Image (cartoon, rainbow, N blue to C red):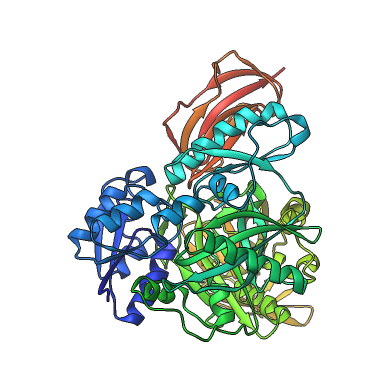
Length: 613
Protein backbone atom coordinates (compact mmCIF):
# COMPACT_ATOMS: atom_id res chain seq x y z
CA UNK A 1 0.00 0.00 0.00
CA UNK A 2 1.47 3.33 -1.09
CA UNK A 3 2.05 6.13 1.41
CA UNK A 4 3.64 8.95 -0.65
CA UNK A 5 2.77 9.89 -4.24
CA UNK A 6 4.52 12.29 -6.62
CA UNK A 7 2.57 13.89 -9.46
CA UNK A 8 4.78 14.32 -12.53
CA UNK A 9 2.77 17.28 -13.75
CA UNK A 10 1.63 20.76 -12.82
CA UNK A 11 -1.36 23.05 -12.45
CA UNK A 12 -4.93 21.89 -12.33
CA UNK A 13 -4.36 18.16 -12.74
CA UNK A 14 -1.68 18.06 -10.03
CA UNK A 15 -4.02 19.85 -7.61
CA UNK A 16 -6.85 17.48 -8.54
CA UNK A 17 -4.74 14.34 -7.87
CA UNK A 18 -3.52 15.82 -4.59
CA UNK A 19 -7.15 16.28 -3.50
CA UNK A 20 -7.85 12.57 -3.81
CA UNK A 21 -4.56 11.71 -2.11
CA UNK A 22 -5.54 13.81 0.89
CA UNK A 23 -8.88 11.97 1.07
CA UNK A 24 -7.03 8.64 1.01
CA UNK A 25 -4.41 9.70 3.56
CA UNK A 26 -1.55 9.65 1.04
CA UNK A 27 1.32 12.14 1.40
CA UNK A 28 1.87 14.29 -1.71
CA UNK A 29 4.94 15.48 -3.61
CA UNK A 30 4.93 18.18 -6.30
CA UNK A 31 7.57 19.01 -8.87
CA UNK A 32 7.86 22.54 -10.20
CA UNK A 33 9.86 24.54 -12.70
CA UNK A 34 11.37 27.89 -11.78
CA UNK A 35 8.42 29.57 -13.50
CA UNK A 36 6.09 27.55 -11.23
CA UNK A 37 7.98 28.15 -7.98
CA UNK A 38 4.93 29.84 -6.46
CA UNK A 39 2.28 27.91 -8.39
CA UNK A 40 -0.74 26.55 -6.52
CA UNK A 41 0.19 22.90 -7.06
CA UNK A 42 3.60 23.51 -5.48
CA UNK A 43 2.00 25.31 -2.53
CA UNK A 44 -0.66 22.72 -1.69
CA UNK A 45 1.58 19.63 -1.85
CA UNK A 46 3.16 18.30 1.35
CA UNK A 47 6.59 18.43 -0.31
CA UNK A 48 7.76 20.25 -3.44
CA UNK A 49 10.88 19.54 -5.53
CA UNK A 50 12.43 22.08 -7.90
CA UNK A 51 13.16 21.19 -11.52
CA UNK A 52 15.73 23.80 -12.64
CA UNK A 53 14.61 25.71 -15.71
CA UNK A 54 11.41 27.18 -17.11
CA UNK A 55 10.49 25.49 -20.38
CA UNK A 56 8.79 22.06 -20.50
CA UNK A 57 11.81 20.60 -22.31
CA UNK A 58 14.04 21.51 -19.35
CA UNK A 59 11.61 20.51 -16.61
CA UNK A 60 8.35 18.57 -16.95
CA UNK A 61 9.66 16.58 -19.94
CA UNK A 62 12.79 15.51 -18.05
CA UNK A 63 11.84 12.07 -16.83
CA UNK A 64 15.26 11.51 -15.29
CA UNK A 65 14.90 14.57 -13.07
CA UNK A 66 11.38 13.60 -12.05
CA UNK A 67 12.41 10.08 -11.02
CA UNK A 68 15.29 11.54 -8.99
CA UNK A 69 12.83 13.93 -7.35
CA UNK A 70 10.52 11.06 -6.40
CA UNK A 71 13.37 9.08 -4.83
CA UNK A 72 14.75 12.12 -3.02
CA UNK A 73 11.32 13.00 -1.58
CA UNK A 74 10.68 9.45 -0.39
CA UNK A 75 7.77 8.84 -2.76
CA UNK A 76 6.77 5.26 -3.47
CA UNK A 77 4.46 6.02 -6.42
CA UNK A 78 4.24 8.38 -9.43
CA UNK A 79 1.06 9.66 -11.10
CA UNK A 80 1.72 11.23 -14.52
CA UNK A 81 -1.45 13.35 -14.85
CA UNK A 82 -2.04 14.14 -18.53
CA UNK A 83 0.15 15.69 -21.19
CA UNK A 84 3.94 15.90 -20.81
CA UNK A 85 5.22 12.35 -20.06
CA UNK A 86 1.88 10.72 -19.29
CA UNK A 87 2.01 8.54 -22.42
CA UNK A 88 5.76 7.99 -22.51
CA UNK A 89 6.62 4.31 -22.12
CA UNK A 90 10.30 5.01 -21.38
CA UNK A 91 9.29 7.25 -18.48
CA UNK A 92 6.96 4.57 -17.14
CA UNK A 93 9.82 2.05 -17.30
CA UNK A 94 12.17 4.45 -15.53
CA UNK A 95 9.64 4.84 -12.72
CA UNK A 96 9.28 1.06 -12.39
CA UNK A 97 13.04 0.49 -12.64
CA UNK A 98 13.50 2.87 -9.70
CA UNK A 99 11.30 0.58 -7.60
CA UNK A 100 8.34 2.97 -7.65
CA UNK A 101 4.67 2.23 -8.35
CA UNK A 102 3.48 3.56 -11.72
CA UNK A 103 -0.09 4.88 -11.63
CA UNK A 104 -0.87 3.95 -15.20
CA UNK A 105 -0.94 1.13 -17.73
CA UNK A 106 2.02 -1.17 -18.39
CA UNK A 107 4.72 0.35 -20.64
CA UNK A 108 3.97 -2.19 -23.38
CA UNK A 109 0.33 -1.01 -23.49
CA UNK A 110 1.50 2.60 -23.66
CA UNK A 111 3.77 1.74 -26.58
CA UNK A 112 0.98 -0.06 -28.39
CA UNK A 113 -1.60 2.71 -27.99
CA UNK A 114 0.24 5.96 -27.20
CA UNK A 115 1.53 6.06 -30.78
CA UNK A 116 -1.56 6.79 -32.82
CA UNK A 117 -0.01 5.12 -35.86
CA UNK A 118 0.57 1.84 -34.04
CA UNK A 119 -2.85 2.05 -32.37
CA UNK A 120 -4.58 2.32 -35.73
CA UNK A 121 -2.62 -0.61 -37.09
CA UNK A 122 -3.64 -2.63 -34.04
CA UNK A 123 -7.28 -1.83 -34.84
CA UNK A 124 -6.76 -2.80 -38.50
CA UNK A 125 -6.47 0.77 -39.84
CA UNK A 126 -3.48 1.83 -41.94
CA UNK A 127 -2.43 5.52 -41.94
CA UNK A 128 -1.71 7.30 -45.20
CA UNK A 129 1.85 6.72 -46.41
CA UNK A 130 1.65 9.24 -49.25
CA UNK A 131 -0.86 12.07 -49.54
CA UNK A 132 -2.33 12.90 -52.95
CA UNK A 133 -4.93 15.41 -54.12
CA UNK A 134 -7.55 12.67 -53.94
CA UNK A 135 -6.87 12.23 -50.21
CA UNK A 136 -7.57 15.86 -49.29
CA UNK A 137 -8.47 17.15 -46.84
CA UNK A 138 -6.17 15.33 -44.42
CA UNK A 139 -5.41 15.81 -40.77
CA UNK A 140 -1.77 15.95 -39.71
CA UNK A 141 -1.43 14.63 -36.15
CA UNK A 142 1.29 14.05 -33.59
CA UNK A 143 1.85 10.33 -33.05
CA UNK A 144 2.36 10.93 -29.32
CA UNK A 145 0.42 13.11 -26.91
CA UNK A 146 -2.84 14.93 -27.50
CA UNK A 147 -4.63 18.13 -26.51
CA UNK A 148 -4.73 19.38 -30.10
CA UNK A 149 -0.98 20.01 -30.24
CA UNK A 150 0.79 18.97 -33.39
CA UNK A 151 -2.49 18.85 -35.34
CA UNK A 152 -3.17 20.62 -38.63
CA UNK A 153 -5.93 20.34 -41.26
CA UNK A 154 -4.43 20.42 -44.75
CA UNK A 155 -6.77 21.25 -47.64
CA UNK A 156 -4.16 22.11 -50.30
CA UNK A 157 -1.31 19.82 -51.25
CA UNK A 158 1.06 22.78 -51.55
CA UNK A 159 0.64 23.45 -47.81
CA UNK A 160 1.46 19.90 -46.70
CA UNK A 161 5.23 20.20 -46.19
CA UNK A 162 4.96 23.42 -44.19
CA UNK A 163 2.20 22.03 -41.99
CA UNK A 164 4.14 18.82 -41.40
CA UNK A 165 7.16 20.86 -40.28
CA UNK A 166 5.07 23.02 -37.96
CA UNK A 167 3.32 19.97 -36.49
CA UNK A 168 6.64 18.23 -35.85
CA UNK A 169 8.05 21.26 -34.05
CA UNK A 170 4.94 21.70 -31.93
CA UNK A 171 4.78 17.99 -31.04
CA UNK A 172 8.45 17.89 -30.09
CA UNK A 173 8.01 20.93 -27.84
CA UNK A 174 4.91 19.58 -26.11
CA UNK A 175 5.70 15.85 -25.85
CA UNK A 176 9.39 15.41 -26.61
CA UNK A 177 8.45 13.38 -29.71
CA UNK A 178 8.24 14.94 -33.16
CA UNK A 179 6.69 11.99 -35.00
CA UNK A 180 3.60 12.98 -37.02
CA UNK A 181 1.34 11.23 -39.53
CA UNK A 182 -1.60 12.04 -41.82
CA UNK A 183 -5.06 10.54 -41.95
CA UNK A 184 -8.30 11.36 -43.83
CA UNK A 185 -10.11 14.31 -42.27
CA UNK A 186 -13.78 13.59 -41.56
CA UNK A 187 -15.80 16.79 -41.92
CA UNK A 188 -18.70 17.66 -39.60
CA UNK A 189 -18.34 14.66 -37.32
CA UNK A 190 -18.97 14.34 -33.60
CA UNK A 191 -16.16 13.53 -31.22
CA UNK A 192 -17.36 10.69 -28.97
CA UNK A 193 -15.23 8.78 -26.47
CA UNK A 194 -15.52 5.96 -23.96
CA UNK A 195 -13.97 5.89 -20.46
CA UNK A 196 -12.22 2.61 -19.70
CA UNK A 197 -11.23 1.12 -16.33
CA UNK A 198 -9.28 -2.14 -16.21
CA UNK A 199 -7.82 -3.96 -13.21
CA UNK A 200 -5.03 -6.54 -12.96
CA UNK A 201 -7.56 -9.35 -12.52
CA UNK A 202 -8.94 -9.29 -16.07
CA UNK A 203 -11.95 -7.02 -15.56
CA UNK A 204 -12.39 -4.26 -18.16
CA UNK A 205 -15.25 -1.84 -17.68
CA UNK A 206 -16.61 0.83 -20.04
CA UNK A 207 -17.97 3.73 -17.99
CA UNK A 208 -20.32 5.22 -20.55
CA UNK A 209 -19.70 7.77 -23.28
CA UNK A 210 -18.69 11.41 -23.50
CA UNK A 211 -19.22 13.96 -26.26
CA UNK A 212 -16.36 16.42 -26.84
CA UNK A 213 -17.42 17.93 -30.17
CA UNK A 214 -17.01 21.61 -29.26
CA UNK A 215 -13.34 22.15 -30.05
CA UNK A 216 -10.98 24.90 -31.07
CA UNK A 217 -7.76 24.02 -32.86
CA UNK A 218 -8.71 20.37 -32.32
CA UNK A 219 -8.59 20.90 -28.57
CA UNK A 220 -11.75 20.29 -26.57
CA UNK A 221 -13.62 23.22 -25.04
CA UNK A 222 -16.91 21.79 -23.74
CA UNK A 223 -17.45 18.12 -22.86
CA UNK A 224 -20.41 16.20 -21.51
CA UNK A 225 -21.53 12.76 -20.36
CA UNK A 226 -23.30 10.80 -21.57
CA UNK A 227 -22.93 11.64 -25.27
CA UNK A 228 -26.42 12.83 -26.27
CA UNK A 229 -28.39 11.53 -29.22
CA UNK A 230 -26.51 8.27 -29.87
CA UNK A 231 -28.67 5.37 -30.97
CA UNK A 232 -28.69 2.37 -28.65
CA UNK A 233 -26.86 0.34 -31.29
CA UNK A 234 -24.12 2.96 -31.79
CA UNK A 235 -23.70 3.43 -28.05
CA UNK A 236 -23.24 -0.30 -27.61
CA UNK A 237 -20.85 -0.45 -30.58
CA UNK A 238 -18.43 2.22 -29.34
CA UNK A 239 -18.37 0.74 -25.84
CA UNK A 240 -17.67 -2.74 -27.25
CA UNK A 241 -14.89 -1.37 -29.49
CA UNK A 242 -13.35 0.42 -26.52
CA UNK A 243 -13.26 -2.77 -24.47
CA UNK A 244 -11.81 -4.61 -27.47
CA UNK A 245 -9.04 -2.03 -27.82
CA UNK A 246 -8.18 -2.27 -24.12
CA UNK A 247 -8.19 -6.06 -24.12
CA UNK A 248 -5.97 -6.17 -27.22
CA UNK A 249 -3.07 -4.63 -25.25
CA UNK A 250 -3.83 -6.15 -21.82
CA UNK A 251 -4.68 -2.68 -20.59
CA UNK A 252 -4.58 -1.76 -16.89
CA UNK A 253 -5.84 1.43 -15.27
CA UNK A 254 -7.87 4.35 -16.61
CA UNK A 255 -7.89 5.14 -20.32
CA UNK A 256 -10.05 6.62 -23.04
CA UNK A 257 -10.90 5.34 -26.51
CA UNK A 258 -11.90 8.08 -28.94
CA UNK A 259 -14.08 7.97 -32.05
CA UNK A 260 -15.32 10.33 -34.71
CA UNK A 261 -18.99 9.68 -35.37
CA UNK A 262 -20.40 10.68 -38.76
CA UNK A 263 -23.38 9.40 -40.76
CA UNK A 264 -24.25 6.95 -38.02
CA UNK A 265 -20.82 5.29 -38.14
CA UNK A 266 -18.01 5.31 -35.58
CA UNK A 267 -14.44 5.82 -36.86
CA UNK A 268 -11.67 4.84 -34.42
CA UNK A 269 -9.32 7.74 -33.69
CA UNK A 270 -7.00 6.72 -30.86
CA UNK A 271 -6.67 5.41 -27.34
CA UNK A 272 -5.34 7.77 -24.69
CA UNK A 273 -3.44 5.73 -22.13
CA UNK A 274 -3.96 8.20 -19.32
CA UNK A 275 -6.58 10.18 -17.47
CA UNK A 276 -8.41 12.69 -19.68
CA UNK A 277 -8.93 16.38 -18.93
CA UNK A 278 -12.69 15.77 -19.13
CA UNK A 279 -12.79 12.85 -16.67
CA UNK A 280 -14.87 14.85 -14.10
CA UNK A 281 -18.06 14.52 -16.16
CA UNK A 282 -17.79 10.72 -15.97
CA UNK A 283 -17.07 10.96 -12.24
CA UNK A 284 -20.18 13.08 -11.74
CA UNK A 285 -22.49 10.80 -13.72
CA UNK A 286 -21.21 7.51 -12.27
CA UNK A 287 -20.44 8.75 -8.75
CA UNK A 288 -16.84 7.51 -8.83
CA UNK A 289 -13.41 9.02 -8.17
CA UNK A 290 -11.32 7.91 -11.14
CA UNK A 291 -8.05 8.94 -9.51
CA UNK A 292 -8.92 6.84 -6.47
CA UNK A 293 -9.73 3.96 -8.81
CA UNK A 294 -6.35 4.39 -10.52
CA UNK A 295 -4.59 4.20 -7.18
CA UNK A 296 -6.53 1.13 -6.04
CA UNK A 297 -5.82 -0.65 -9.33
CA UNK A 298 -2.11 0.17 -9.01
CA UNK A 299 -2.18 -1.34 -5.53
CA UNK A 300 -3.57 -4.57 -7.01
CA UNK A 301 -7.19 -4.28 -5.88
CA UNK A 302 -9.95 -5.59 -8.20
CA UNK A 303 -12.73 -3.37 -9.45
CA UNK A 304 -15.94 -3.60 -7.44
CA UNK A 305 -18.11 -6.50 -8.52
CA UNK A 306 -21.09 -4.21 -9.07
CA UNK A 307 -20.57 -1.74 -11.90
CA UNK A 308 -21.61 1.83 -11.02
CA UNK A 309 -24.81 3.08 -12.62
CA UNK A 310 -25.15 6.32 -14.54
CA UNK A 311 -27.30 9.05 -13.02
CA UNK A 312 -28.18 12.34 -14.65
CA UNK A 313 -26.06 14.44 -16.98
CA UNK A 314 -22.79 16.37 -16.52
CA UNK A 315 -21.19 19.14 -18.57
CA UNK A 316 -17.65 20.53 -18.29
CA UNK A 317 -16.35 23.82 -19.68
CA UNK A 318 -12.65 24.55 -19.99
CA UNK A 319 -11.94 28.10 -18.91
CA UNK A 320 -8.91 29.39 -20.81
CA UNK A 321 -6.86 32.57 -20.55
CA UNK A 322 -7.28 33.34 -24.24
CA UNK A 323 -9.06 35.72 -26.58
CA UNK A 324 -11.33 33.77 -28.96
CA UNK A 325 -11.98 36.91 -31.02
CA UNK A 326 -8.25 37.22 -31.78
CA UNK A 327 -7.57 33.76 -33.18
CA UNK A 328 -7.71 32.20 -29.70
CA UNK A 329 -4.50 34.02 -28.74
CA UNK A 330 -3.31 33.02 -25.23
CA UNK A 331 -3.21 35.71 -22.56
CA UNK A 332 -0.86 36.27 -19.66
CA UNK A 333 -0.73 38.42 -16.54
CA UNK A 334 -1.93 38.58 -12.96
CA UNK A 335 -5.18 36.85 -12.00
CA UNK A 336 -6.32 39.41 -9.43
CA UNK A 337 -9.55 37.70 -8.39
CA UNK A 338 -11.02 34.33 -9.31
CA UNK A 339 -14.10 32.72 -7.81
CA UNK A 340 -16.87 30.48 -9.11
CA UNK A 341 -20.23 29.75 -7.41
CA UNK A 342 -20.17 26.68 -5.16
CA UNK A 343 -23.11 25.16 -7.06
CA UNK A 344 -20.58 23.69 -9.53
CA UNK A 345 -17.30 21.78 -9.30
CA UNK A 346 -14.12 23.76 -9.89
CA UNK A 347 -10.82 22.08 -10.77
CA UNK A 348 -8.09 24.71 -11.03
CA UNK A 349 -4.42 25.37 -10.56
CA UNK A 350 -4.83 29.08 -9.86
CA UNK A 351 -6.09 31.33 -7.12
CA UNK A 352 -6.24 35.07 -6.41
CA UNK A 353 -2.97 36.86 -7.14
CA UNK A 354 -1.37 34.08 -9.20
CA UNK A 355 0.44 34.85 -12.44
CA UNK A 356 -0.46 33.22 -15.76
CA UNK A 357 2.85 32.82 -17.58
CA UNK A 358 3.96 32.12 -21.13
CA UNK A 359 5.44 28.64 -20.80
CA UNK A 360 2.41 26.41 -20.30
CA UNK A 361 -1.12 25.68 -21.45
CA UNK A 362 -3.53 28.63 -20.90
CA UNK A 363 -6.10 26.44 -19.09
CA UNK A 364 -7.29 28.29 -15.98
CA UNK A 365 -9.84 25.80 -14.73
CA UNK A 366 -12.46 23.20 -15.51
CA UNK A 367 -15.97 24.04 -14.36
CA UNK A 368 -18.40 21.12 -14.09
CA UNK A 369 -22.16 20.99 -13.51
CA UNK A 370 -24.22 17.86 -12.78
CA UNK A 371 -28.02 17.72 -12.86
CA UNK A 372 -30.84 15.20 -13.46
CA UNK A 373 -31.18 16.22 -17.12
CA UNK A 374 -28.99 17.68 -19.84
CA UNK A 375 -31.11 20.84 -20.06
CA UNK A 376 -30.72 21.48 -16.34
CA UNK A 377 -26.97 20.80 -16.43
CA UNK A 378 -26.44 23.27 -19.30
CA UNK A 379 -28.48 25.95 -17.55
CA UNK A 380 -26.66 25.40 -14.26
CA UNK A 381 -23.20 25.62 -15.83
CA UNK A 382 -23.99 28.69 -17.95
CA UNK A 383 -25.37 30.54 -14.92
CA UNK A 384 -22.35 29.66 -12.77
CA UNK A 385 -19.90 30.87 -15.41
CA UNK A 386 -21.89 34.05 -15.89
CA UNK A 387 -21.69 34.78 -12.15
CA UNK A 388 -18.01 33.88 -11.83
CA UNK A 389 -15.63 36.68 -10.82
CA UNK A 390 -12.59 36.72 -13.13
CA UNK A 391 -10.39 39.80 -12.84
CA UNK A 392 -7.22 39.48 -14.88
CA UNK A 393 -6.27 38.43 -18.40
CA UNK A 394 -8.94 38.04 -21.06
CA UNK A 395 -10.68 34.64 -20.91
CA UNK A 396 -13.11 32.63 -23.02
CA UNK A 397 -15.82 32.90 -20.33
CA UNK A 398 -18.34 34.79 -22.51
CA UNK A 399 -17.80 32.34 -25.36
CA UNK A 400 -18.52 29.42 -23.02
CA UNK A 401 -21.74 30.97 -21.73
CA UNK A 402 -23.00 31.72 -25.23
CA UNK A 403 -22.00 28.26 -26.46
CA UNK A 404 -23.92 26.55 -23.66
CA UNK A 405 -27.02 28.56 -24.60
CA UNK A 406 -26.68 28.28 -28.38
CA UNK A 407 -29.75 26.57 -29.92
CA UNK A 408 -27.61 24.19 -31.97
CA UNK A 409 -25.83 23.00 -28.85
CA UNK A 410 -28.88 22.86 -26.60
CA UNK A 411 -30.57 20.71 -29.26
CA UNK A 412 -27.48 18.42 -29.37
CA UNK A 413 -26.99 19.06 -33.10
CA UNK A 414 -23.35 20.17 -32.73
CA UNK A 415 -20.25 18.75 -34.43
CA UNK A 416 -16.53 19.50 -34.46
CA UNK A 417 -16.96 22.43 -36.87
CA UNK A 418 -19.30 24.27 -34.45
CA UNK A 419 -16.88 27.16 -33.88
CA UNK A 420 -15.96 27.39 -37.56
CA UNK A 421 -19.61 28.27 -38.22
CA UNK A 422 -20.50 30.34 -35.18
CA UNK A 423 -17.37 32.01 -33.81
CA UNK A 424 -18.10 35.54 -35.13
CA UNK A 425 -21.54 35.60 -33.49
CA UNK A 426 -20.29 34.02 -30.28
CA UNK A 427 -17.53 36.62 -29.89
CA UNK A 428 -19.51 39.72 -30.88
CA UNK A 429 -19.05 42.22 -28.01
CA UNK A 430 -22.22 43.06 -26.05
CA UNK A 431 -20.96 45.58 -23.49
CA UNK A 432 -23.20 47.05 -20.82
CA UNK A 433 -23.81 50.70 -21.83
CA UNK A 434 -23.91 51.78 -18.19
CA UNK A 435 -20.62 50.13 -17.20
CA UNK A 436 -18.49 53.27 -17.88
CA UNK A 437 -20.83 55.41 -15.76
CA UNK A 438 -20.68 52.91 -12.90
CA UNK A 439 -16.89 52.91 -13.12
CA UNK A 440 -16.73 56.70 -13.09
CA UNK A 441 -19.09 57.01 -10.10
CA UNK A 442 -17.13 54.45 -8.10
CA UNK A 443 -13.91 56.29 -8.91
CA UNK A 444 -15.43 59.59 -7.77
CA UNK A 445 -16.60 58.16 -4.42
CA UNK A 446 -15.34 60.20 -1.50
CA UNK A 447 -14.64 63.37 -3.41
CA UNK A 448 -16.19 66.60 -2.16
CA UNK A 449 -19.51 67.26 -3.82
CA UNK A 450 -19.38 71.06 -3.38
CA UNK A 451 -16.65 73.56 -2.69
CA UNK A 452 -18.49 74.71 0.46
CA UNK A 453 -18.93 78.33 -0.57
CA UNK A 454 -20.35 78.00 -4.06
CA UNK A 455 -24.06 78.34 -4.75
CA UNK A 456 -23.94 77.59 -8.47
CA UNK A 457 -24.48 74.34 -10.31
CA UNK A 458 -21.45 72.06 -10.47
CA UNK A 459 -19.80 71.55 -13.81
CA UNK A 460 -20.23 68.15 -15.48
CA UNK A 461 -17.53 65.61 -14.66
CA UNK A 462 -16.25 63.31 -17.39
CA UNK A 463 -14.21 60.13 -17.44
CA UNK A 464 -13.10 58.18 -20.51
CA UNK A 465 -12.83 54.41 -20.72
CA UNK A 466 -11.89 51.87 -23.34
CA UNK A 467 -14.54 49.14 -23.50
CA UNK A 468 -14.73 46.34 -26.09
CA UNK A 469 -12.15 48.16 -28.21
CA UNK A 470 -14.08 51.44 -28.33
CA UNK A 471 -13.74 54.66 -26.35
CA UNK A 472 -16.68 55.65 -24.11
CA UNK A 473 -17.22 58.81 -22.10
CA UNK A 474 -19.11 58.84 -18.80
CA UNK A 475 -20.70 62.14 -17.72
CA UNK A 476 -22.20 63.07 -14.37
CA UNK A 477 -22.50 66.08 -12.07
CA UNK A 478 -23.52 66.90 -8.55
CA UNK A 479 -26.78 68.79 -7.97
CA UNK A 480 -28.78 69.80 -4.91
CA UNK A 481 -30.81 66.62 -5.36
CA UNK A 482 -27.77 64.38 -5.69
CA UNK A 483 -25.95 62.88 -8.66
CA UNK A 484 -27.31 63.53 -12.13
CA UNK A 485 -26.13 61.14 -14.83
CA UNK A 486 -27.88 61.92 -18.11
CA UNK A 487 -31.26 60.50 -17.20
CA UNK A 488 -29.97 57.53 -15.19
CA UNK A 489 -30.90 57.78 -11.51
CA UNK A 490 -28.05 57.02 -9.14
CA UNK A 491 -29.56 55.01 -6.28
CA UNK A 492 -26.26 54.31 -4.56
CA UNK A 493 -22.58 54.85 -5.29
CA UNK A 494 -19.45 53.94 -3.37
CA UNK A 495 -16.02 52.65 -4.32
CA UNK A 496 -17.15 49.05 -4.74
CA UNK A 497 -20.87 49.16 -5.52
CA UNK A 498 -23.01 51.36 -7.75
CA UNK A 499 -26.78 50.98 -8.14
CA UNK A 500 -28.38 52.66 -11.15
CA UNK A 501 -32.02 52.96 -12.13
CA UNK A 502 -32.95 53.14 -15.79
CA UNK A 503 -36.44 52.62 -17.21
CA UNK A 504 -37.70 51.88 -13.67
CA UNK A 505 -35.26 48.95 -13.30
CA UNK A 506 -32.52 49.02 -10.66
CA UNK A 507 -29.28 47.23 -11.49
CA UNK A 508 -26.29 46.58 -9.28
CA UNK A 509 -22.74 47.09 -10.50
CA UNK A 510 -19.85 45.72 -8.50
CA UNK A 511 -16.68 47.66 -9.30
CA UNK A 512 -13.04 46.68 -8.77
CA UNK A 513 -9.95 48.54 -9.92
CA UNK A 514 -6.35 47.44 -10.43
CA UNK A 515 -4.31 50.38 -11.71
CA UNK A 516 -6.02 51.61 -14.87
CA UNK A 517 -7.87 48.31 -15.32
CA UNK A 518 -11.47 48.42 -14.07
CA UNK A 519 -14.00 45.58 -13.80
CA UNK A 520 -17.71 46.41 -13.65
CA UNK A 521 -19.45 43.11 -12.96
CA UNK A 522 -18.07 40.96 -15.79
CA UNK A 523 -17.19 43.90 -18.07
CA UNK A 524 -13.51 44.90 -18.28
CA UNK A 525 -12.65 48.54 -18.97
CA UNK A 526 -9.44 50.51 -19.25
CA UNK A 527 -9.42 53.96 -17.67
CA UNK A 528 -7.96 56.46 -20.13
CA UNK A 529 -5.90 59.46 -18.99
CA UNK A 530 -7.50 62.87 -19.12
CA UNK A 531 -4.61 64.16 -21.20
CA UNK A 532 -3.21 61.30 -23.30
CA UNK A 533 0.56 61.11 -23.54
CA UNK A 534 1.93 61.27 -27.07
CA UNK A 535 3.11 57.83 -28.17
CA UNK A 536 5.17 56.65 -31.07
CA UNK A 537 3.09 55.55 -34.02
CA UNK A 538 4.00 52.40 -35.91
CA UNK A 539 4.47 52.60 -39.63
CA UNK A 540 1.71 51.25 -41.88
CA UNK A 541 2.13 47.51 -42.44
CA UNK A 542 3.69 46.95 -39.03
CA UNK A 543 3.25 43.46 -37.58
CA UNK A 544 2.96 43.50 -33.80
CA UNK A 545 3.24 40.51 -31.50
CA UNK A 546 -0.34 39.44 -30.62
CA UNK A 547 0.84 37.63 -27.48
CA UNK A 548 3.93 37.01 -25.38
CA UNK A 549 6.05 34.16 -26.64
CA UNK A 550 9.21 33.02 -28.39
CA UNK A 551 10.13 33.36 -32.04
CA UNK A 552 10.77 29.74 -33.04
CA UNK A 553 11.14 30.13 -36.77
CA UNK A 554 11.52 32.71 -39.55
CA UNK A 555 10.57 31.85 -43.13
CA UNK A 556 13.50 30.64 -45.21
CA UNK A 557 15.41 33.42 -46.94
CA UNK A 558 13.35 36.18 -45.34
CA UNK A 559 15.33 39.43 -45.07
CA UNK A 560 14.67 43.13 -45.51
CA UNK A 561 13.85 43.75 -49.18
CA UNK A 562 12.16 40.38 -49.75
CA UNK A 563 8.89 40.59 -51.74
CA UNK A 564 5.98 38.91 -49.94
CA UNK A 565 2.35 38.10 -50.73
CA UNK A 566 -0.67 38.76 -48.53
CA UNK A 567 -1.21 35.80 -46.22
CA UNK A 568 2.29 34.41 -46.74
CA UNK A 569 3.81 33.03 -43.49
CA UNK A 570 6.69 35.19 -42.28
CA UNK A 571 7.48 33.81 -38.84
CA UNK A 572 6.14 31.57 -36.08
CA UNK A 573 5.67 32.35 -32.40
CA UNK A 574 5.40 29.70 -29.71
CA UNK A 575 3.27 30.57 -26.71
CA UNK A 576 1.81 28.21 -24.12
CA UNK A 577 2.97 25.12 -26.06
CA UNK A 578 1.17 26.17 -29.27
CA UNK A 579 2.71 27.63 -32.43
CA UNK A 580 1.11 30.71 -33.97
CA UNK A 581 1.76 31.73 -37.58
CA UNK A 582 2.36 35.43 -38.35
CA UNK A 583 1.52 36.26 -41.98
CA UNK A 584 2.03 39.20 -44.29
CA UNK A 585 -0.94 41.61 -43.99
CA UNK A 586 -0.60 42.83 -47.61
CA UNK A 587 1.28 42.07 -50.80
CA UNK A 588 4.44 44.14 -50.95
CA UNK A 589 8.00 44.26 -49.66
CA UNK A 590 9.36 43.35 -46.25
CA UNK A 591 11.14 46.55 -45.26
CA UNK A 592 12.15 45.54 -41.73
CA UNK A 593 12.57 42.26 -39.82
CA UNK A 594 12.96 43.10 -36.14
CA UNK A 595 13.25 39.66 -34.49
CA UNK A 596 15.26 36.45 -34.78
CA UNK A 597 14.68 32.82 -33.78
CA UNK A 598 14.94 32.27 -30.05
CA UNK A 599 13.98 35.84 -29.19
CA UNK A 600 11.36 36.49 -26.49
CA UNK A 601 8.64 38.99 -27.42
CA UNK A 602 5.93 40.81 -25.49
CA UNK A 603 2.44 41.80 -26.73
CA UNK A 604 2.60 44.83 -29.03
CA UNK A 605 6.30 44.41 -29.80
CA UNK A 606 7.22 45.19 -33.42
CA UNK A 607 8.03 42.01 -35.33
CA UNK A 608 8.30 43.18 -38.94
CA UNK A 609 7.10 45.82 -41.40
CA UNK A 610 5.60 45.09 -44.82
CA UNK A 611 5.25 48.02 -47.25
CA UNK A 612 2.30 47.57 -49.59
CA UNK A 613 3.12 47.34 -53.29
